[in-house]
Image (cartoon, rainbow, N blue to C red; front, side):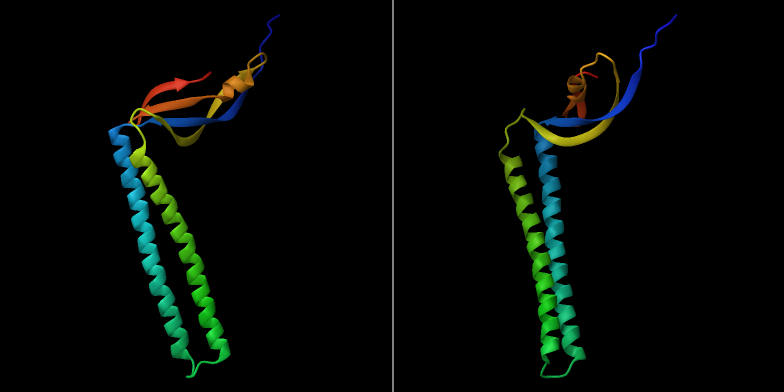
Length: 149
């Protein structure tokens, strides 16, 4: 009589790390700078849209503006200011990340994110060990796979 060992196929997070190289730093800085430039564009567009919306409200209403019109204008300005605050916060975070990238030392390992991968597990396997897997990259090329594959 043959005894088969039952296995399960499970999904696990796989941490991705990168070794800091001159190329990695350059690409990270370019990516962050691109994000900062996009936020600056969004801020400009927001200002233009807000000004247009206010001008349109003023154009459609009588002079002097009624309290309702003033409230509409205030609401538009509040919305513009809230969105502007969000964008400025994002820009600040990106600028901080850019500064960190510029000061990080070469050959350090940095987290790049996570992927999901599948693995088999059977009776007697150590689940904790099987979950602790990471991939180490150098300039996008897998240098090492760590953990119990």
